[in-house]
Length: 415
Image 1 (cartoon, rainbow, N blue to C red):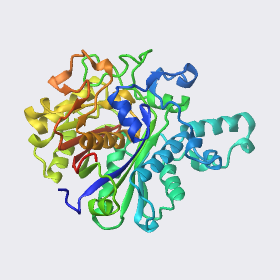
Image 2: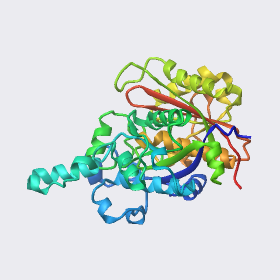
Image 3: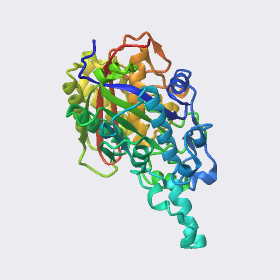
Image 4: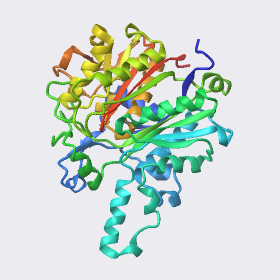
């Protein structure tokens, strides 16, 4: 029985390269329906990035009025759609507006909108630039737009820590709820970094795959790993106390038992000499949740796709979990979507909650079939059903040295 005061995920909204809406996203994941595909050379913008995770058939008109579409960028459209889906999934109807908080993570922001308006400035002059340029590009716009659209007047903020940002926002969400400063927190992130300027900025790190085809482009933990793949999309979650969720008759996916964050304090982009700070984030998350290494049933891995980073992640897991790290199923479903920058952590939280709820370990893209895995890790290739999952560990890290880990536990199951 879940502690009534525990914090649970009661709603999930997803707009991802494998599906829109939690049911479609989960089915697409289990079907190993990859959203990674070649992108147009004009879109690549000379970045050398030729494949990416793309959300197919996303029409903002299904979720937003035209007047709001013209004020915002594609990443905001996806985030607003995910927020609407999450609130509906959690059956949040009437609420105290001062008790609904909105916390997001941000990274790329509205690059497509910003590039278009700057090009208009140079081509036609200041009068050709939209007045909404001042807000549409800003990485915090999603938090503000979600709050405005749903009338949420509680705490509002954005965490900036690249792929670890979603878990940083989750840590803040936990603090608000545990201190009684909110009834529900709408937590999430979205990204649409697939425009020429955005891709050129990302490619400057030199960590992306240069593959021409989707197959074999993104192979985390493989001895043939040669870079990561960017992706668009995102997820929003409703986080609240178990008693308030159940009183409303909401479906509860999982308990968010703990979050922990550390920083390498080493270099803006280069890997640290050891995995000590990554390991510390994992160890702290387990300690705060009261979970022993032997109790971890599945790991949602960061899975950078660059050999040095994958080896550091493996080192961190072995450091904390010991031999158990080689036995626990290691899930990297983001091989189906690409790495969604600041949305990585939130999407992994969604996958972890769904894995616990349905008792299924989500699979990796088929490209990893037959690959020799580093460090002897048990990378999951196909869905593992009836896996007896009780506890999930999520680990993610962001450019600049950010590390974050979270522990989730079961809180019931599908009705």
